[in-house]
View 1 (cartoon, helix red, strand yellow):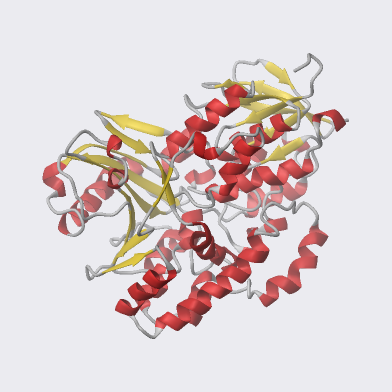
View 2 (cartoon, rainbow, N blue to C red; view 1 turned 30 degrees about the vertical axis):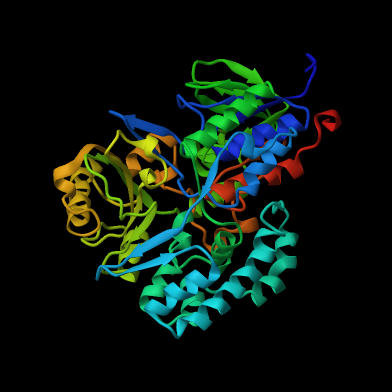
Length: 497
């Protein structure tokens, strides 16, 4: 790389930032990645305690072709660096009456499982799957990597969105096709994977169902941290500079043009292109001088409706639970009421639902011999709620452990070890997430596409944004696609003016 090569700075090394760094390097830029954390990955940190390993963030791997693309930029192959194991089932749903529903595998296997719950829903499921495919073909295949910074593009899509019934919620769409209350819950939880309430999230996010069916659900041997490590090595092979434990205080903007960053210690670094992988709302409110921020961006921050918070318990067990599959959705006694308490009323319920990750079902390296490793995620209100997590955190953890002891993990209270937890406070302090939201702004229709934070900063030249708060949205596929969007917007280094 010559001394006069065009320079790009990437703020934040979540998957959106890593993907942006690799894509800009492939365009010929000299790239520097700056992150305040001690390791790459953003929320995909790896936590260890006394031989137990935990992926702190994303654990469900879908759409692996998006990772393939990053290696292919440099004529390499994903499979030479990461071993992805297909899971079966993808998820086991565990209901409050202790019945289960295994979801995943072949279409025939899924229909067999549906028949056990409600035979009449087999035909409805096939119709739901077809509807999800139609959404996927437009919303994902055609639009997920398309820039939405121009309003008239959004307007031009309105006829298609109406045909797809995108004005419906995910719950409404699922309920039109299925009659079983249990299956309605099972097939409407997808928005929760990206921070949305099924009762208010646009049915566009029903595409996640077909995405899983088309490409499967995987686990990377070594965990999500192994994917981050493989991408780090790819970045190093391509001479991308990585600066960890380094905090960007603000972006230098003069006359509506970004020209560099200022670090917390006062150091200034200039660049031709700035890409922020920080939380988009935090970026506009805290990292850019107020008079440089466009009115439209200020309004989006002010009017934003944020995703729920996350309470995550990590622990080991001194015994193994071989009957517990890799991914379990443990559903409480209530559904709509619980979600209303989380998203609308912003109060802690006596009831709760859980996502349980048992990586040792697939990879024994996550725990000492004869033990299991667990990650249990509980959706909770974000920090707009009046909850004192210094008190409620321990209380909620004990309630979760007690509930699992009585159901899925018998004798857990005798065998739990090395437990700790994260609250929305930790998401705010560690990841600078506005209001401690788990997935930035919520996936509502009024916060999608053009209405979401733009990937090209509004009113500021040479500043681009990736990550959960931007188009197309949260989740691993979403943030990887956000980097594909800016790839279309940023010229080759040789063409940069």
